[in-house]
Image 1 (tube, rainbow, N blue to C red):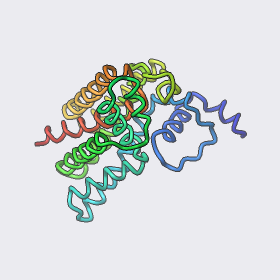
Image 2: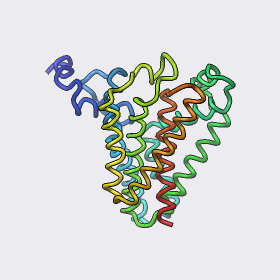
Image 3: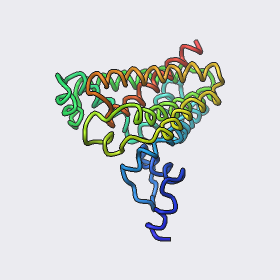
Image 4: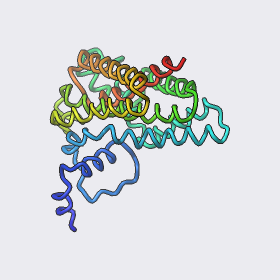
Length: 261
């Protein structure tokens, strides 16, 4: 079957969207017989949460292995977070660093967007990344039992990516070019599907009570970043979406640490 035939067969299907999202959100060596296009990312956002299952599951597997060979919880948590960073190519960490530099150093919208596109790393980015990674490692190391921690890691990765997909619909693009504009606004069905995965999967894995607390906290974190981005630059960019993933995941972890204590 030729590439054009494969494109016609799978275009718009769940398999197609899953592969597009996997290539977009991870650095896993996936070979696509289907042409990748940023125009397909908008619809593929409906399965962003499912990519979180892979990223969170592999990260949780690293923690489980580290714990069972006698590695201390803090070091195991660091390895788990490192696994996520490697799997995603630091995609979201780079995003929140750019947002921190842009929002912290820019005096107006144009200057903020210009700084966010600059590849250089500033003080705001460094401090933000230290705090983000520190929060994640501290929270993960505080959880009792490897299986509960496994569920939290998988759920947080899933929920935060699902919220990122929903934000693509609910927030306008902040500029005429870049990821937000090139991916386009996904259909409402994709946004609702992404949001449903973000809510349902944690509730199933962690239980109705703990799962609801964690999801509510993650949504609050996503809304917080979304509100700041709207005030600062008038909408979302790829960096803002990545920041939503990072902050909502941190909020998820913090709420679970508070729930357990």
